[in-house]
Amino acid sequence: MMLISEAFENYREIEVISRGLSPKTLESYIYAEKLVVEYFSDTDIINITTVDVSKFYQYLCNHQRPDTARGNIICLRSVLKRCVRKGWLNLDVEDIKIPKREKRIITYLTESEVDRFIFVVGKQCRGYSSLNRLRNIAIVSLLYDSGIRISELCSLNRNSIKDRQFIVIGKSKNPRICFITEKTEQRIKDYLDLRDDNNRALFIANQTGKRITSDNVRKVFQNVCNRSEFINIHPHTIRHSFATRLLDKEVDIRYIAELMGHESLDTTKMYTHFSNPKLKKIYENALS
Image 1: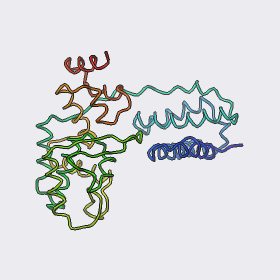
Image 2 (image 1 turned 180 degrees about the vertical axis):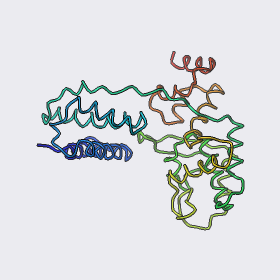
Image 3 (image 1 turned 30 degrees about the vertical axis):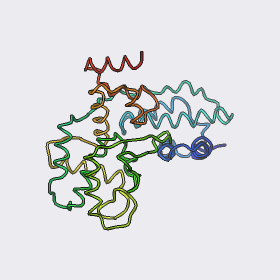
Image 4 (image 1 turned 90 degrees about the horizontal axis):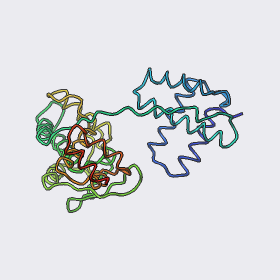
C-alpha cells in the first residue's frame, strides 16, 4: 500500500530534490499534492483511475486558470508515471492526456508607454517616500533594460552590477549576462545614495527593511495601475516589452533568447506577435 502523499513525497525526494531542480518546481509538486489529497483524500494510490484523473482535471478547470490546472495535472501524471515504472501501480498513464496550453496573448508596452509608466511611478503618492519612488523607478527601468524576471531582480545585491552589466542564475540554473543603460545605472545610484542601511540587497522593502520580494514588486505595479490609465500591467509585461523592443529593432531572435534565459527558441517565438510581417520574417530567418 502506498498513500498518495507518500507517492508525492517519494517523487519529490528522488526526481526533484536529488536532481537539484528549482525551488519553484518543488513548490509546484507540494501544491499539487495538497490539491490531489484534498480531492481524493489520502487514499492508496492504487485506487486512482484515469477516469478519476479526468474528473479531477475538470474540477481544477472550474476553480483555476487553464495553465494552472494543466500544471497540476502534469505533476500528478509524473508521480503516477513513476509509480507505474516502480511497479507500485497498474495504470496506463498514456491514457492521461495533457491538455494543450492555450495560446497566450502577449501584453507589452511601447518605449513611449514605458516612459509614461515610469513617470507615473515617480509621481508623489501617499505612502510612498522619495526613497521608495526612486527605488520603484530603478526597478522598472532595470526590468525594461535587462528583461530579467522579478525573482532574478529580487536576488540582486548592491555589488552585482559592474560596468553596467551583471549575471543572473535563471530557471535552468545556468548563469547569463545581462545589461543596463547609463540612464538606469544613474537611477539605481540615485536610489542607493539615499539608503542609510547596510543591507547588501540591491532593493529592499520599505516596511521590513529586508530584501524585496516578488510580491513587493507586484504591489508597486498594482499601485501604478490603480492611480493611472494603465490596466493590468505586471512586472512580466515589462519583460514582454523588452523582447518586443529588441525584435522591433531587428535584433536576431537567438540573441534575444540568450538575453532572456530561454533554453528554446520556441519560447521566444511567442514574442514575435505574428500579426507583424516584419517580425515573422525575422523569426523565420533565424530558424532557416
